[in-house]
Image (cartoon, rainbow, N blue to C red; front, side, top):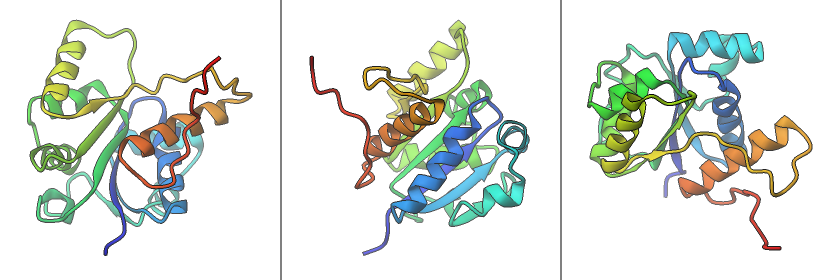
Length: 188
């Protein structure tokens, strides 16, 4: 039995911490990760978190360059459990919505959809315009999940870290990663 296998995409939208925390938590849970970070994603990871490309790539089991269209994750024959793009720009959302597999990130998302695997896009933009909303509908109709990283406050978080951690745990649970621990509403 192979370990769980997750593709993680990081694009240039604000919120690089979600992708980084996802990689860290997946590693802690024994999940094999395949990272594809766009050039703007690398820039944003450095700007928001102070991490270099090498430091980011070291968090993944395997890192792939966006231009590496012959990588294993470009094929449906390479079995993965899910793909999460965290954060996901509107440009990447549009490419996924319209089947534009012009780089490894969007090709892997296309493969994830065609193989009927879980695809989660943590879209980061506000407010949304009509094109954004239509692209979200399109991805949803194809089986993808639109998951803006909107924090929950019912568990009374005391830090941004707690908000990020809970959001990442919710995503891990959504893609059926065993031992994910999102905060659960217990009722009033």
